Length: 468
Image (cartoon, rainbow, N blue to C red; front, side, top):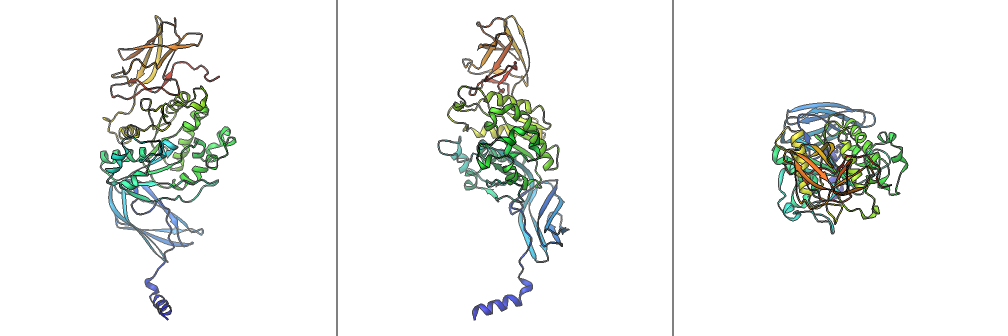
């Protein structure tokens, strides 16, 4: 009897009870940050062949968009300068969905493999430097975090799993250590809401983050597979990036490369192709793309072969083939104990300095160390010039990172000194040297810096074949 009465009441008050058909993707939800001063895209599902009303509180405007026969809709809206919280409402003929905590500010998408995925809390035998203190003091109401749950698929999906979270110790502990600290540093300097989206998966090669179309020029990638489902071509792009492509962002961060180190010559072409594809997907050919050069490590399973320096070289060369790009060097913070360097703070600081300098025009922030420019030989010495050479200096001069070789292509340790912002190398074992190398090993401890205490990448003056 009671159930019947309740049913009658509900039916009689039907005009007050509504079950909205509007469905929004997970990234469009409470606590989200929309890119400020942009034509931000809103999209979702509703009643097919109907009209949908969208209200934005920052300008008190109501927009009307038609839902197509498949039940899909999309709308571009102009966002104001950084601020909030604002409200968004979506009303169709069956009801209304409201978002009450919407902000506008700067949004960055962070992707890659395990060094991007590594959480602030670390993992077993994989500590993060100062993690306990950083987590304990995590409290920034202007920094919002979205972590894409791991998923893979053979075809592009329409949505990802995840939600926008506030900066609290609990949420930060399990969020990317690099991405969180980058976002926090950026927010503190810009003093606007910042949204950080992380879409990453450890142990993954670049091919899984590229679309099927982008891989048409790389048959080596489409034919290769190690059997793992999540390492198949395009599967992470399909499930963890493609659904996000309508979402307006300020730029990309990328930390990946270890899994491609033995195919670095292909990677040097693939990285620019991936960047081009991503920018097309986000409909902005100038979106900043900033990435981390892989850090030194031993790679004992490489059986004495030096694949890692070739990957670092490929990453450095790729940076010269991409517009609006930047790479930060980690030659000084590698670890001989783990492929995951504990010092994620320095990585985040260099990335944030890169973004602040290049995207936000705060030129006092420096991010680039000495970069090999040219060389010549004179009196049994190799004289090397660099870009960004002001304050060029060496630390720990006993470290044998420098080598020179003669025409026989046999390299020997070289002594090094700095004169007039030039690096001078020589070896008693090599008369008439013709080539020089710095840190061209899987693992080395970087000791060449400029006046901003930023490290040089490993480099070489030759193009001789290695690992044969």
